[in-house]
Length: 250
Image (tube, rainbow, N blue to C red; front, side):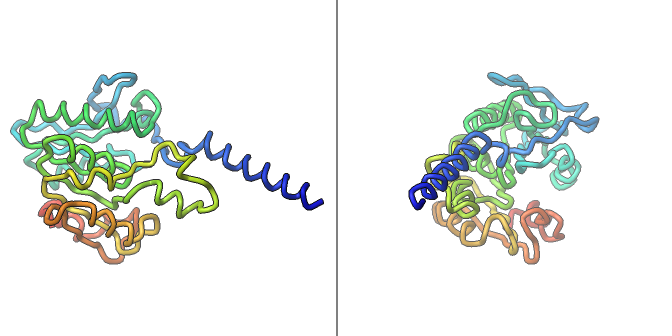
């Protein structure tokens, strides 16, 4: 009887691991549907996909490239960023599978797409600032480590999705199962541009300990941390002091 129970438990555990292995990306990526708000989006051809980019054109040397959260429709963030940065062209990326962009989201593909969008913007503008929120913060950090980013802003960033997954499901061998680990800490030491980390004091997804680990991964003097009191992971940008910090860089 004992061996039978152990065998049943082992099969159930193996089945749970298999379910996560097959469906894990549905827990990370939550694509937004295409709506009339995306009608004016610019289309960028990349290998294996067409990316829609919500944009506010602006002549001149300055631009901002934005990478949003895993369930964010970035088209609705455009007015806020356009008001905050009137002297910059704005490019907001709809990830593969989001808001009319083709293809399927996966870490390697999104990182390639991020480089393509940045290089498109940099070909048009000498000074390109990059802003990344939550999932997008990991893409933004890698760009700043590898490309001539003038300024980096990270909104509710994480150390790695692997660390979050281990905390959410400690009973699963996430190190073996997770395909898209988004280990932002690996790229942080190579960032040289001025970097602002905007964190929420009550972030239920990314605890302050993880934020401090990410901050410590940057070289001394590169990154500054600003904590928005009373905010959580999703309400961070609602605070009045958020916009001030975003614009002023501190």
